Length: 89
Image 1 (cartoon, rainbow, N blue to C red):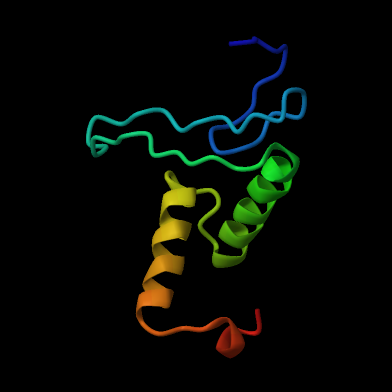
Image 2 (image 1 turned 135 degrees about the vertical axis):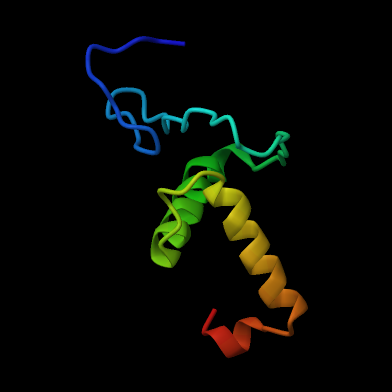
């Protein structure tokens, strides 16, 4: 991991390397597992920006596991019958 001369708060993005600084693990944090999927290289940056923008819109971007919460929220809406035509997408 590259060290920088400035301090970036957990949950914020480093202006030098653009890496989002993780939150420190709390003693009462649930166990977690990495869950990944592949994104075409030409779409990777845009995909991440869209996920973070959507999480920001929902007000969950600064929370731990915000991408998981976003995916869960979206999948739940689909299972509840939301359609792109109904949501303006």
